[in-house]
Image 1 (cartoon, protein in one colour):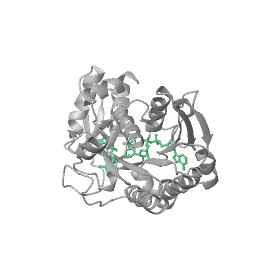
Image 2: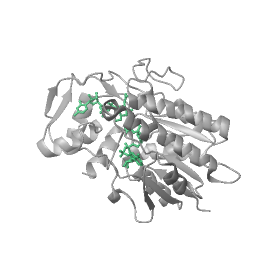
Image 3: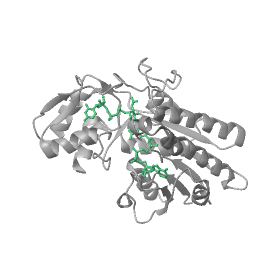
Image 4: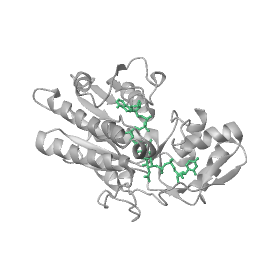
Length: 308
Ligand code: NAD
Ligand code: UD2
């Protein structure tokens, strides 16, 4: 039987891929998005769109009505924006999460709708005990990371106190088609493709030896769906990562290769507060959800290249 899912942030990068996957397996999708960074063009014609603010409880209640579950992805997904507009981003990133959890507990007369929500590796902040497992200490270094961690705490309350099943996905560095390269705070992979194809060169900030765990969006979508479909415990959080580290310098070479051009690399000043090394431990999601990020970086870069 087909089910109806609410996808908040469904007009955005990850949400639009999730929407496609849900529709492809026969589910119905309703999107709540304020189109602040998301685009109408990202949304397949057979998904319903409600344009509204995720922190507006009436809009969220309307969007949740009749839903069998909710994927909550709406957020201002920028560490820099969070530091600049602390209070404004808190409204989207934390108040929005509470509005979704509150609507989920009221959604159905007898059983609350399950909420699978996007958290982030930013919750680990400057914890450098790699690879980071979910039991590692959370030490956010940004308003964005703090709001994601607080979202996890409210999800716990939603489950324990209000009986709303929840699962949190701590995404590491997600990449793939439709990631917008136009803001200076976009993901590095979308920026490097854009610059390579435009100017034939990229700017590596710092020495380029900083590392990240880059995870392909198609894998992230499978993790989200597994977290919705499978019982992973009471109010679990899962790393969504590959368990493989790649340096920014190696990435620049990989992207040049995917574009069929020689790598031309300039170095710029390192970003203030840039995390030196980030790597997730994927074992909890593997054991509880049967999830593994199967897309290699070369495969993911080739798919991303094809979308430019
Ligand atoms: P995105 O900006 O493409 O998507 C976010 C969507 O939320 C957009 O469509 C935007 O219009 C919408 N939105 C923002 N504020 C809203 C509001 N107040 N009300 C309604 N809609 C609103 O970003 P993304 O990369 O697809 O991120 C999706 C989720 O994953 C976010 O919660 C983000 O914090 C999280 N995340 C992303 C990454 C990554 O590497 N991309 C890593 C960790 C966590
Ligand atoms: C952080 C979070 C990630 C996610 C993301 C949201 C960590 C470890 N990661 O990602 O989970 O929430 O924010 O946006 O907290 N770089 C260049 N040249 C460029 C652009 C970037 O060299 O033109 C470098 C940058 O200095 C960094 C790396 O590439 O070392 C990755 O940068 P990013 O902005 O893609 O993501 P990051 O790790 O800040």
